[in-house]
Amino acid sequence: MAKPKRRFICTECGGISHRWQGQCPDCSEWNTLEEEVAETAFSAKHHLATGGRRIQFEALDTPTTPLARSTTGLAEFDRALGGGIVPGSAILMGGEPGIGKSTLLLQAAAAIARSGKDAVYVSGEEATGQVRLRASRLGLADAPIRLASATSVRDILTTLGDGTPPALLVVDSIQTMHSDMIEGAPGTVSQVRASAFELIRYAKENGVALVLVGHVTKDGSIAGPRVLEHMVDVVMSFEGERSHQYRILRALKNRFGAVDEIGVFAMEGHGLAEVSNPSMLFLSGREEPLAGSAVFPALEGTRPVLVEIQALIVRLQSGATPRRAVVGWDSGRLAMLLAVLESRCGLNFSSAEVYLNVAGGYRLSDPAADLAVAAALVSALADKPLPLRAIWFGEVSLSGEIRPVSHANLRVKEAAKLGFDQACGPLLDSPPAGKMRYGGIGGLPGLVDRVMVSA
Image 1 (spheres, helix red, strand yellow):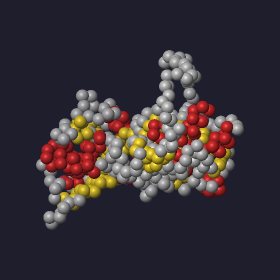
Image 2: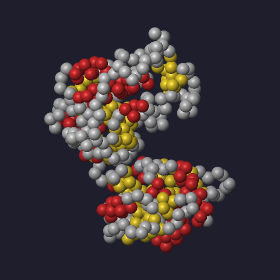
Image 3: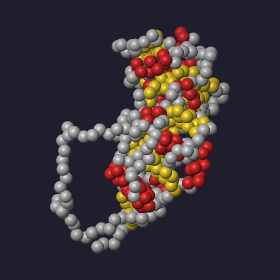
Image 4: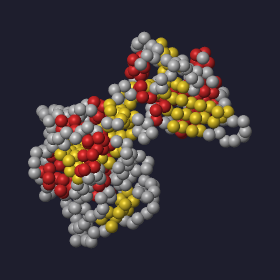
C-alpha cells in the first residue's frame, strides 16, 4: 500500500496538481489551489468489470408515483422553486453576508412547521439562543421548529436517523460542517464536498427536502468546489443591495422547474415581506416626463418586471477624458452602444461624460434592454423627454438594426396592466395583441427621429 500523497485541487475547475502554484494550470485562475489529502493509492490495479452487483435497468415509460411538491407558505419562494419544494431534493442557496438568507429560510421553515410538517433547522454559525432571538423578532417564536446548533455531520445524521425523517432540513451553512471521515478544517474543498455528499445522500434516501446555505466569494460565486453546484438539484442566489429595500431570489439551476425564475421580497422590520407586484418597486412615481428616462419591461423567467433606466449626459468644456459610469448594467455593452450611436447616427458622445443608472438598484442582463438604454441616451443628449407612458425594448446590433426579442406579448401585457399605453420595439410581422399602441423601429436612426418627434 503506497503512502498517501499531498495534492492540490482548484476550487474553480476541480483540476488536480501535485504541488502548489499561484495559478491553476488548467483554468488559469489565480489563488484557487487548495490542499487536500489524496486517497490512498493501491499499487495493484483492479479490474472493475467483475465483483460488483448487477443493476436493474428500467424503461422510460415505467409507471412511477409522481412526486408531490410541498409549498412553503411563501408564494414568492415557491415561485422561484418552480411551484414548491420537491421531496428528496437538494437546494443550495448563496448570497452576500447580511442579505437575509437565514431570515428567509427561518420564515420558510416556520411556515412548513405551522402547516403540520416536521422542519429541522441546524445552524453551524449561531447558537440556538441567537436563532431564537431572531425568531422572536420575526414573530416566529411559536413555530414548532426543531432547532439545533451543530457542525458535525455524523452527529446530525445520527440524531436524524433515530426518528422519522423531517419534511425539511436546513443546514446553515455548508462551509461550517465537518466530516470526521476526511482530514482538514471546515470550509476546505474536501470537507465541503464530503459533508455535502453525506447530507445529500441522506436527503435522497429518506425523501427529505434539504436546503444548504452557501457562503460567497468577493466576486459573488459560491465558495468551495464548483462540483458542489453539480451535486445539488437547485442552485439559488439571494441578491440585493443593502442600501435598497428589495431582495431578489433567483434560480440559477433547477432540475424541477424553469431557470431564471425570481421571487421578490422587501426587507421590513418584521422580516422579509413578499412583493406581488415588483414593477412598482423599480418605477419612480413620475408625474412629468423627464429627459434621459426610459421604461424597460425586463423579463425574469416568466415574470416581466418594469424598470426605469436613467441617463445623464454632461458636456465637458476642457480636453479632459470623459467618464463612463454605469450602475446596474454591463459597462462593456454601454461602450458598444455608444460606439454604434456615434457611427450609425452621427451623435457625439466622445466629448461628454455619460452616466447610466437602473433605478432601484436592479441589475439588468436582458439584451432586450439595448433599445431602452439607447432611447434614454438620445433623450438625455437632446434634452428632450420621452413619452411618459411608453415602454422600450429591443436588441441593438452593431449595424444599428433593432432585432426582435423573446416574449414581446408578455412584456406589453404587463405594461398595459400598469397603465402604459404605448410600446416601442423592433419591427414585427404581427404586433403584440392588446389596446396599446405599438410602434416598430427598424434601426437606431429611426429611434433618433422618434425621440425628436415625440418631444
